[in-house]
Image 1 (cartoon, rainbow, N blue to C red):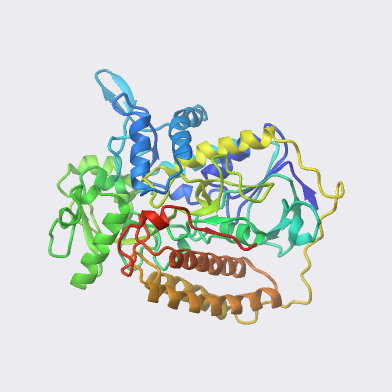
Image 2 (spheres, protein in one colour):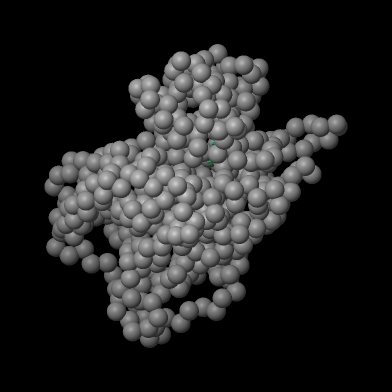
Length: 532
Ligand code: SIN
């Protein structure tokens, strides 16, 4: 058993920025499933929404965030993230990150991007590769820190809690079992300050803009440990994912529409003004639903994003990554509209936390996409998430470093080692892959952009069966990363369906044909689920 002052699970913007601060105060383990840089953050194209211009204000950013959130944001959290954002951005710049700038009347200013739902240009970016530049900066800094153990290719299996061990004390998080994917060994790591920063769950859907690692591990583990989970019905579908048979999960940033890109249907019509006066740059929930309706009505496979009317040099310079990737798939975006479809993009709910990342389970914190802090409400405003990751990571660190250390029940107890029991290797891997595909397809078909009670009930029944089968696998076979991810995926899928079934109205990202109206009287509140 190894002990750390802090354990962080996940290596995106939230986890790494927390770990960098924590390393100034104690020993830190950062646990990550694949390589350090494999995170949702590294895939973020748009940038970081932050008030830096004289033409903008905190009040406007707060207002835009609350409006997108459709009545479910926590205003205290929104204000904290918006007003503390600039200081956190300054720290990132001090670490060496250079956001794009432009020259205005002889001096340099940030080149601010525009995205849906923002009343001002306020998105700091590094071309269209902001996330990977942030990831590189933070990871470079972390690798220089002698107090951090970066455990790559390690996957958290489950949290260890006083409750699970049967202690007759207050339940709290005591540590975590971690699978070393290379050796198959399960390690026992102990801490009284454990931070989940595992990102979202896009892989629960057949089509997603997320990388393969986004399997909802943090939410599933927190759920099993008894922490409250909030608002999982609010899954954001990004309107524009590249549509091509061999382009897996490639996002076409909303910034393309921010720079004038227009959505057209297969007849070439600019259809968005029929759905919303803000046209192609309306908030994401509206655009994704409009595309879904256009596709269903026409029977076409996709719609098109057209930026061919802009100067090709500008397009190539502003979106080099998107330009090159589209070109690889045979689309020159300076001359041809890009075929696009909506895809699952962001989990707006998650583990319920306060504005400092504290969950309902003492000793357990959650930051970044895995957490439901109240910033996003029923619909996240574009590019608010990287800012949230920075601000809440900082607050979590400040809170944890000031809090008294927990007394382990019964003094310095030893946590029990993982018991593998009399298990064998999985005999038929095909079952894992089949179940994985089935979950993703049924979530796409029954729990997607437009829902009904019947589709949700059908999904719920199928998921219960799948969960039973997966549970048998988990207890009878040697665990692998694939099996653990499948187990987590099934848990998170069931949480999304249960949350969606309990909200009998349409709000933000949750839209159901059976209850198409907003019902503030009954549903202007978080959906909370807890196993205990
Ligand atoms: C994008 O670039 O469109 C994604 C930005 C975000 O999801 O915040």
